[in-house]
Length: 372
Image (cartoon, rainbow, N blue to C red; front, top):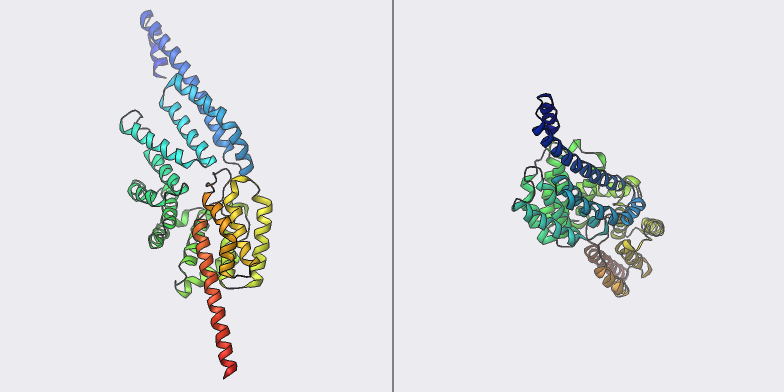
């Protein structure tokens, strides 16, 4: 814009030398702007496709290599901040969608180093986004302890009045849960609830925090009776499947199953068992959902083996090995594991052992009463 104004002014001033120089400069800048506009258009096409549901995002995965190649070529020609940014975010989106979180850790570390060296515009680049993606990638590639340290370090950069504060806190919270630091997770949950802007969050976001709290209450069953009543109410009233809870439907189904298992509510358990089967048949056919498929089968095995902990542990051992070896699904495919399935299975076996011990104690008490 400035070059165009100068060119026009030199024309009005009848200064041909400077007019010609500005005209040449303007021509180069317009060329550059055209390429930047092309990169911007490609970037927003990818971004628009990524908001659709899982099947559309899977189609996007087939197109992403071409989009990335085009953006890389444009950045080589222009080497501007704009082309860097479009390429950088699209790379992160691609790796996130396919579940290559180790590569995201590398990209964010390289970007941090280039920012420190001044090779990236420090006034324009929002380092908080880079930090968030690094922390999130640590969560998804099972580096919870390392990620938790980074989350604590970066948290100070997010102001509590920002919507990004809540997004970041969710990841921070999940890292604490995955690292089995449940007290820390409760503290973070409390921070979210005490934030004066909590009530202004979308209802879907508030429901996610409710689901997180419910999982924590389930793990820490020694919580107060009032909290446990709230827990029971939530588990029994939340819908088994909802489009609004995309990414969390498996977590809800699993929590409901474990709730009825702990209560040894056979009727409720069988109803949830059917729900697990239907959901697996309809929504877990893709190979990328292997972890959820395996864990569903492990839960089903508890019913087949009549809740005998030793038999369940033995029969599910091959499934557990496959679960440990299975990669984390990408965002284009996956459901969120609020608590890792390996930890949930350990918890499930603990519930079965408690039930077996209670049953033995009840049988012994019944025998004593008959003798008396």
